[in-house]
Image (cartoon, rainbow over all chains, first blue to last red; front, side, top):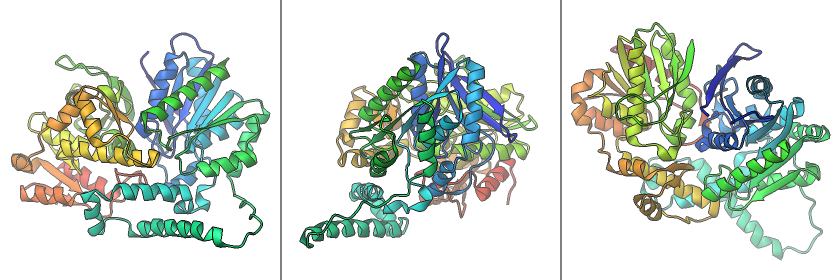
Length: 302
Length: 267
């Protein structure tokens, strides 16, 4: 069935715009997909739209919408770096509109219950909203950032630094990249920091065995996103299904592993896909994700 | 006021699916059609074009945005997108303006949309055109997409598993391939490879109706200036279509230049 555009005025009087992909026949459960950062519902190679088509074919209506400030909706997200905007999302800036979108979706499609699926920052919004809205029966978190973005320098994360290094290495054979470097169009500061961190890690690994044996140092206490911890617990206590998927090539996967050990209730399922990056840009990782999403929604609906 | 709708295929050689159109309404006389960038560049700069359209409408120009078939909010899949369908979508958006009673239609193009605007300018019923950082060579643009894909593979697998040659051979054999997360079909690939580069010298006849705005593409600016076209390097543009390290919802200087150029203000 054809996609249906909709809009509504939120509590602050801003117009929120979205699209519903209807299912064939009556459905009891619907899905809202929440993308990451502030690029809107069409972002990251239309992952949400692909998921919407698949879920609608399986009998579940799906809603994509842009919270105020993002994409088609009214208002502007604040100016800033990727990290600053990630903090803006992390602080819950998109939650109020998500709660209103849940009500809109129920009114428009007649579904009683909803599943929220969020990617990256959208996973945080999904979890916060799932903890607050009674109609949400489950939340699938795709690569949720677990450490507050404002509290760490992006390149301090070994995974992020390694990811940058791999990208720089990939460009070594690119004449354009060399030209950009020689013209001063590259970020020398970032390059130096990435290389310096690599050297530090390499040297630390070389020197470590030569040190006298000592008691293992306790694992550093990480300052995880407290709102996320609380939201997972609240949703779990209310009997809502929560699951997490991550990619093993996601720079934040080690943070998630530590988060899982410290904070995820034992019966919250989680999976780490092999050969999968944060953006699900390869065919096998996309298929893994589509399979997981379909399984999750049908298990909540059952 | 803004209206969103799906505009269906036209009557001539246009088999594409309905396209998403957003009409930012103003006085209803002078219109601007906004042709966006493609794939990830389109998503990263969507809010900018939404805000540009809002500023144009505030300046009295009806702004009409659209997504190419299989991209953005339009129906279809990227795999079915073709260059022909993208041109058709642009023509559909221009036709929509005339159906809405436009006395004048201006054209705006960003990156891939800039290529479409520059290529279609001689044959579309439009008054003025403004392009931002236009892609002049689609074949080179496709190579850039492949470079991003190679980087994605490096990040994901630690090495390139399927190189440029293998992907291109597969596309030439008629198989769609995932490039930077978007499934590109063999027809689009063939069209991108075969599309002639924009010859700026041949656009000299449109010099009084065309303005090129760049902030990164010095080469484009130099070539446009040599061809006698009005090209402006706009300073302090913070956003990039290439990455998401800095995300800006608007660019005041760029918007001002664009609105003035479409209004025909000579400065």
